[in-house]
Image (cartoon, rainbow, N blue to C red):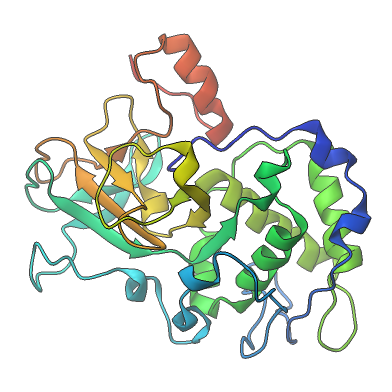
Length: 299
């Protein structure tokens, strides 16, 4: 899923010269021998991220702790005391996994508050493409630095965002030729493919990050956007053209907050809208939603 409409990729990205990404990235060996394993078991040292990175303050150092799990990213719901989450992850017919309410949630009630695991700026979008050189550098470093368990949780997410073969080939070329390990060696073919999987997952699931202003807002202006963030639990929330929940990342820096748009009954699936303008014709909405790899059945 994705909590936002990912801005269309333009042909300019494909034609960019690899020299734009002339920065060299470093992370620590050893890498796992199997694709399903985490990319790095040693996360004590990772890529050189620019000190001028605008989103550096949105990232939590705990993410590199091998003991950190997905539950450590959830902020205790102050509206529900110490009862724990008011949702559970379960099968959603025709949709894979989804979040379901475990108790009645009133309109405006807080459902989820969560830290991001990856936050990238919008440097590239300002130039007409998704990732600028510093964004890609930051993305690689953050993926490599995640704890093994967080990497596993991330790779369980759907990565169905359709990216053109030339674009993925271009990303693969950059990853193979411009990314170096701490011992001076380059990424293997398998490691490069694994990072391309991570890119697809990010494209599919990333939500817009906004400049925080301490208020909760249903819809924020484009001028307030500062980048995109990946939230592991939030990414499990499925789409509906009649959503019962809404989200915002502008109340606290780097934090996703989901609230009920209407009364939600115990056992009901929690849903959000992946797109704006839900009053558009069904055919148009379905066409826009296919980028997430499913055919919307909403009326």
